[in-house]
Length: 512
Image 1 (cartoon, helix red, strand yellow):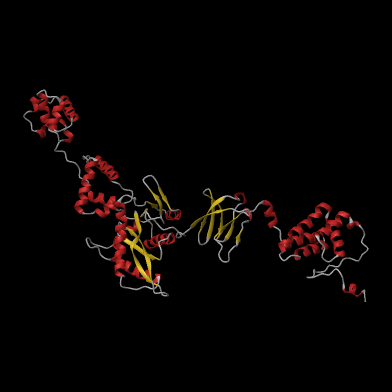
Image 2 (cartoon, helix red, strand yellow):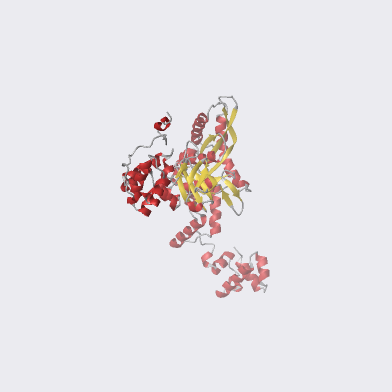
């Protein structure tokens, strides 16, 4: 506190304000304010020269006199509140000031409020709770050390990589081994960790490995597309450790290192022949690790996690399903080819490049970020087709709606001879669909010549041969032969034969 009595004494001696500030080790503005306050209250040197410095201060500033007591905050309550998500010291200081206003007490300024809280934390050594809030962060990384498997065929040693996830508030951990560190293993580790914890943290902090983070600079963070999808599915935010911040990296690597080292050390003398066997042993040691008492404080990780679990976000209804993204071009047959299977796309996107999202069960196709098609994923023999009728051009859709039975029903409405010719067209090819064009062309003749004439033309054609062609029927209609009275016997309807001869056996006996 400035020595106001000395300020008034020096002022009475005619010393300027700058020199007074230097002499009393205070700001020039403080000197000016004190002199103005003294002039307002008519406190001159002659009146106060016999008073103590404390009395002078109390006369100048009654509300801030040394006898006025500030209300000390309840820092035990402040510390408990700081563990809750979204609570800051600034918010708690505002609430503290409001309490003081209601009770008529004097609050500390925010700087003093924060300083006393830091002092409280140091005294109680509650730094872990200060750094991490329950249910807020999950740290993940691959362990630096590897476990070992023995190949049952060759006897060679196979490396198994340890995925580790830690909740830093409680220290509760999950770990699982994989044969590689590729994206599928990385995502699967996260999914299994969330299932093990029974909830989701608000923040996910990985190291800057390429299976998760493509780019992490001061101005931009680019995440792997599948990794971002997983975060959106679980409703968490990915905040990678800053690449050039050793403190951030140490947080992740330190937590993960403690777990992996303890578990791998416990399994160092055991031999495993399969990944399943190794993971069963890892989970046994993981339970021991989580329930092991702390060395420097009471309780265990499992006991602390029982409190932290209440702050976790709920799991989604279904676990995340890993998706693989590919790029494909829509071909002229309005299909894309992915993993040796073919999937249809609306024909408007022919020759466009699209993004394809593949899961075990679904295929989704995107153009410029918008989904334009989805299919159930095909499995089994290659070169299968999945076609949606709405994706086809209108003329293709109309053609697709026809089948053999529909052609026959249409022909029967015209006459039995027309139906017989249609059946001949359908059975004349190895594949029924190859006769659709001939059937359509034949039946369309009823619109040009009338159904009655077509009926007569088909009857006439069948009187000439048991396997008439489309051209023969068209010729009869063009020439008007169907209008002539036929003197021949009615044509016999016969089923088409596999082989037909234009000359009978009697023809070859003429020379005898």
